[in-house]
Image (tube, rainbow, N blue to C red; front, side, top):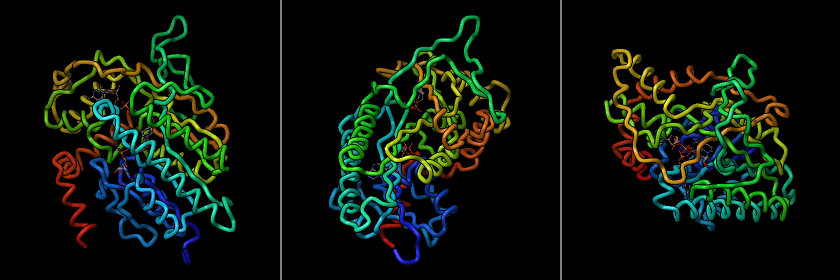
Length: 381
Ligand code: NAD
Ligand code: TYD
């Protein structure tokens, strides 16, 4: 498109991870046009991108990825060279209540985008040259791992340490790119299915695609239905902290800006047809995270030490609750030199501070007022 070197469509750019990806690309690549394609579901919030919304290389299109005709038209109109696909339904608890929406958005939406990209790129004289379809997926497709540890050690133990960032693990098994898929929740089943479609398009039509499977992200702009922002907000309001089961489940946590940095690297330098696992080497039991959150938020609010520990409330476990996720991201480290940059306590401090300093954002998102903001800003302009 004329003045810009390249056009990249980012789907789900108004969501949590998508907004960090859009911000990074808009700032880092002023010669690339970044088109944010988002339906603005409850999880999409254009206030996440307020700081970059007026940039000349940024534009927003309100559209549903399941609308195939719209995706076809969008490919032609924007002459997109690349797609970074993050749009999805992303919350496991919601998928348990409403699996159809997950199949529709995550599976059919991805297929619609793949087919639209394929038709447009195959119609071009240069074909797939210089094109890229990058699909963002999750570690949850691999299933669950046991909590194990070498004899004589008590988890968590330090497995590897490099670049000063400590690595914590609750076992000696990790998800690898070559592992078979074994999803358990409707969310992970829908993401697994979408990953298979992306690889099928690569193998069948030669689509230059890449899939990455990342562990749990945390950081600013995450919708407060997920563990970390939900609990920060609840501690702030002194509301109960509902810990599922005994809080023994283990997740591998990565700061969202480290994920966005990995996406940038892989989009530009990753090998098409490949899968890369992205993880933080940073495994925590839920109950331990909750305690860190209580201490951090109480300290930031100037409350007494341990004052809010009594908010911790053990509730009925999530159905089909996977015990442990742990990613081995050695391929990404050795091939492309990516490493997580933040120690967890530092990331949690930054995150808690951000939510407490952005109470207006939290209040708007939790009250539903943000829907009016979209209308005012984008629909009636
Ligand atoms: P999110 O729920 O915060 O955002 C999803 C975005 O997609 C929202 O802006 C929403 O409006 C948009 N969207 C939903 N349905 C759409 C549709 N039909 N058409 C267009 N847009 C639609 O999600 P997130 O946490 O930022 O996750 C982004 C991606 O990363 C997802 O694909 C998710 O599976 C994957 N992922 C997330 C994590 C995590 O910890 N959050 C970890 C690994 C992978
Ligand atoms: P979540 O943030 O929903 O991410 P995911 O299910 O994709 O890992 O949950 C993280 C962990 O925290 C998971 O083991 C479920 C648990 N959890 C609770 O104990 N209480 C809660 O209120 C929530 C939302 C999650």
